[in-house]
Length: 213
Image 1 (tube, rainbow, N blue to C red):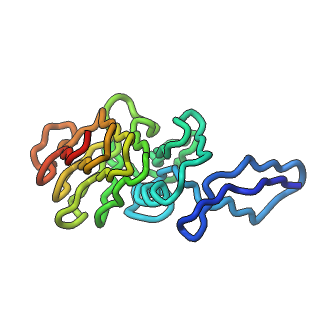
Image 2 (tube, rainbow, N blue to C red):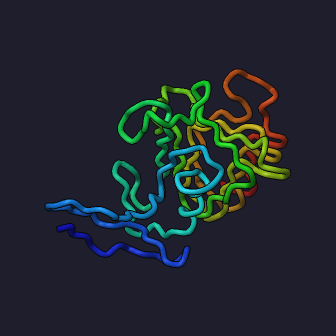
Image 3 (cartoon, rainbow, N blue to C red):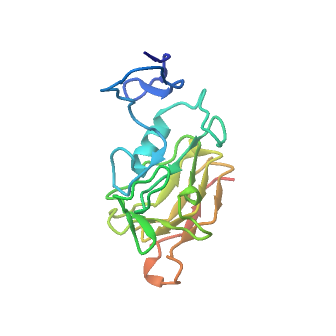
C-alpha cells in the first residue's frame, strides 16, 4: 500500500507541482511510479533539459514560492542544489558519470540563459568536491553575441550568486538590472579560471549594476 497526498500546484507550465508530502510505502513492491521532475537539482552540464542549469532557472521563474521549504535552505526562496556527478560514488552522485574535466564542471550555454525573475539562490559552493575555490564554471564562448552570463531582473530581488566561474560571455559576466535590489554576489571568479588568464574575460563588464541598489 502506498499512501500519497495531493500535491500543491501553481499556474504556469500548464499547471506544475510545486511540492508534495512524503510518499509512504508500507508493504509489497511498487513499480512504474513516476515522481516527476525534481525542480531544484542541477545534476549535469547540459545546455538544456532535466537536471540542467537552464531548467532550474526556467522552473524557478515559473513556480511560485508559497509553501516552498527545502531542507537546510531558506524557506520561500528557490535554492539550486548542485549535485553534478564527478565520477565519485557518494550520496547523490553516480560513479559511472563524470561531468568534470581538470577538476571543473563546465556549463556552456548555447544561447542566453533565462534572466532570474524570481528570488533564487545559486550557490555552487554546495557542489560536492568544493574545497574553497570555484569548481563550477559557466562559460559563454558558444552562447552567441550580446549575451550576458547571468542576468537578474527586477523580480530577482534578494537573490544570491555564489561560488561560480563566469567566463567568456560576449556581453557582461553578470548583470543586475534595474530594481533587482539586495542581490548578494560573493565568492565568484569572474573573467578568470583562477590562473589569471586574460583570455577568459567577458567582453564588456565582469559585473554591471544597472539601476539596482
